[in-house]
Length: 259
Ligand code: IPD
Ligand code: CA
Ligand code: CA
Image (cartoon, rainbow, N blue to C red; front, side):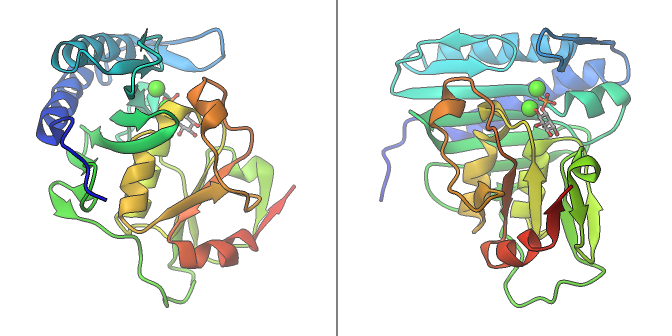
């Protein structure tokens, strides 16, 4: 299906990079506070969401905006920007390098396109309404089928994976601290699959189309389809989200046993 151009992906990449510059100004030089929902926030998260909201409202006055730090404009607009100003705030506040700015475009509860920029490693993942997902403007793809799952294979775990599952996966389980980044690196073929718990819509609004257009798939760990209706209304997805190169998901799921 061909989509009419409704936004300019290069413009969104530039905004994400400008937001990244704001973030780097605070990196390793900020304090973290806990919000009412017991999740962390810094001055950088708030400054970036303010910046992106102002810029996006000017450039796309007909689009709504939903942001993790409180931005909420035009809920009923046909298209909405869904913002995670810093995905990986805990890593950011700890001085670790994997965190990013996520700008997703949604139509109702359907993620369409987006940009995820990781300033500390200068990786910019993007996907337009059609065409491939890219990393720094080069097309990316999930790991090809037919590779044996070995001690050198990688999956990206949720930070609480050690508490939740007895993991019999024979390879390496890594957790960098950003759901959006995990989706992107699975999309780029760096890991077979990933798991995320306590997932909110802003964690995946840009990450899902990047993963899907790179040949990946996402579902619930139970194997049920991932429906975003409630998440779009602000409810966290109650089950772990399981995603990756589709032909490996069943084999990896069988290696995860709930504790
Ligand atoms: C969190 C991070 C974390 C993931 C959580 C998210 P935040 O987002 O992406 O890696 O496991 O589900 O809520 O709070 O850093 O934006
Ligand atoms: Ca997040
Ligand atoms: Ca965040």
